[in-house]
Amino acid sequence: MSDLLEDLGQAVFDMDEDTTVELTQQAIDEGMDPEIILNDSLVPAMDEVGEEYENGDRYVPEMLLSAEAMKGAMKLLRPLLVESGVEPAGTVVLGTVEGDLHDIGQNLVSMMVEGAGFEVENLGAETPAEEFVEAVKEHDPDVVGMSALLTTTMTHMPEVIEALDEEGLREGVKVAIGGAPVSQDFCEEIGADGYAPDAASATKLIKKLTKN
Ligand code: B1M
Image 1: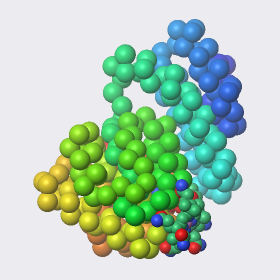
Image 2: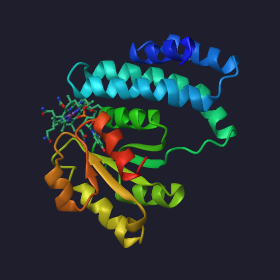
Image 3: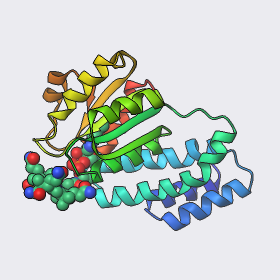
């Protein structure tokens, strides 16, 4: 790997958004293939960040800062990737369920999944079932991801699955869920396809569900 790509990955790992953006621009200006910048430098750096978090060697705010740096680089790369026809790894519609304002974790999941090369339609907090359904019709995603932080709102998750079923859309998508009160048992109970306890494992789960 070139020194520049190595330094770029290190900047993401070090949570240094300014350097990440600067080095991404430099790599673009030097004519590097945007796909190589993404896949050989940025994505492996975020994988490492995810691993550190899973091992307990990195906390949420530090993971967020690396994700922000990655987002800064993606802003520069996305138009070039689209131009060069690089297919995203898949599309994910993501939202926090109805009545639930908590969107910090969900945004973190969104950033990490985006960092892994997926296109993410982030519906934000307080997303009713109908909005998930509309987004699935509009974006034809591979995965619908739902987040809930309250025991009183996790009950909306099966409603979304039912609404997708009623519209004949359930077969065409995988459903991933997460959030503090949610568990693997709950996932199985409501017929979702996967549960992940944190943003790093959500990314792995979505990769697995889409076989990326
Ligand atoms: Co609220 N809140 N809150 N809150 N809040 C909790 C969740 C609570 C546990 C605090 C407590 O009592 N100890 C409690 C819930 C109790 C329960 O139901 N079991 C609670 C409560 C009760 C409330 C209110 C009802 C308080 C009130 O008004 N009386 C109210 C509800 C409002 C509403 O939603 N309608 C409320 C409001 C708020 C704020 C608005 C002030 C604010 C939210 C701001 C925002 O998000 N924009 C807030 C906050 C910040 C919290 C705590 C302190 C932190 C949540 C957070 O952001 N964590 C929280 C207590 C706590 O967790 N310590 C609490 C950091 C974040 C990175 O983690 O969200 O868990 P987390 O996300 C993780 C994983 O869960 C996972 O990955 C993420 C990253 O690793 N994950 C997924 C999340 N979504 C996923 C989706 C996936 C996969 C993984 O697949 C698709």
